Length: 311
Image 1 (cartoon, one colour):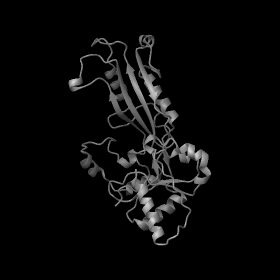
Image 2 (image 1 turned 45 degrees about the horizontal axis):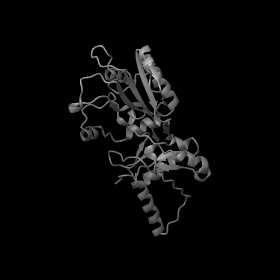
Image 3 (image 1 turned 60 degrees about the vertical axis):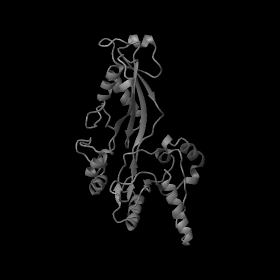
C-alpha cells in the first residue's frame, strides 16, 4: 500500500515549500508487513512505545468509498484463520466409505445460512451493539447497493436486505478456499483421502479470538466430530465416526471501534468537513487491520483516514 506513503511525503514537502510550520508534533510509523499481520509492530511498540505516545493515531490505510467521497473510518474488524481437514484412512469404496468432501461440505453449511447469518450457538453474544450515533452515521451514508450490484455482477446480496455498512458491524465466516481432489482432466473417480477448507473469521468489537475459537470448536464437536491438531493415527480414525484436524493459523486479533462521540473524533470530523463538505463518517469498514497491536499498548484514540484513490 504505497500510495498513503507518497501522499504523506508530498504533504510534508508542500508544507516545507510554503514555509508552513506544523502546529502539532507529527510522528510517522511506516509498516511494510500489514498483509502478514504486522508481526514486528508489537515488538516495536513494546520497545519504543514511549516514543509513539500521542493524542491521536491516524491510520492512512484502507480503500476509498464506492461513492468516491472522502471518508473517515472509526473501526475495523478483527481476524482469525483456521484450516479444517476431514481425513479418511484408505478409503476407495463409493457408497460405503464416507466421502471427506461431502462431510466437510455438510460441516461448513451447518455454520451459516444462505444469508450469511452464523448458526453457531452463542456466536453473537459478545457482539457490541451499534450506538445511536453509529446508526445515524450509516443512515447518512450514500447507499451504493445498486452500484455495487452492477459493478460486481451480484443479483442477490447476502444479508437479508441489510446494507453493507450495517452488515460489516457483524462478524462473518468466510470460506477462503477448499482443497479436495480435482475437476476436469484432473478429476478421478475415487474417494479422496482428505478434504481441507480454510476459513477466515471476521471479528467485531467485544469478540475475542480465543472465545471465537472456543465457540467454533464446540460447534464442530456438536456436529459429531472428534477434533485433533496433528495428523490423526489410523487408530484414531477407526475409533471415531468423524475426525476433524484443525490448524489455527496464528493467534488472530480482535476488532476495534473508536466511539463517534469521543472528543477527538468529533474534533477531527469538524476539521475534515472544513476540507471536504461531503465527508462520510464510516463506523466500521469490512476489512481488518492489526490495530489491536496499538490499542492494547497505547492510549490514543485510533481513526482511519483512507488516502488511496481519493479524488
